[in-house]
Image (cartoon, helix red, strand yellow):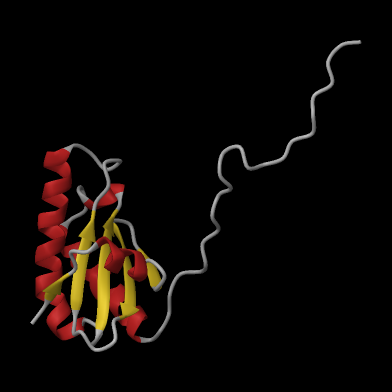
Length: 132
């Protein structure tokens, strides 16, 4: 049986796991020390208004309910992060993408490590000399 991630701490821990990105979503997977197959869904406000975000979450929930019981990793957390292309993407293509990233995750393959942008204001700049 699938369990749902509800605590922020679980999402933060999953963020340190294996990452696989596709057009409509990013899948994060991380071992959870024997707590079974768990899943969580995140869609940020960048994606759209509440109607759009909820529609995307409903589609993701249906995908996960269909594919995680047989294709998910045992004793792992799975977090789907919505991307802007996920709402318009055909449901069948999303399903194919999910099966693909689950297979990659089973093999231990993920996307290359991501570089984080420096925070605004953290870059040291040379002082500008004014007129004499």
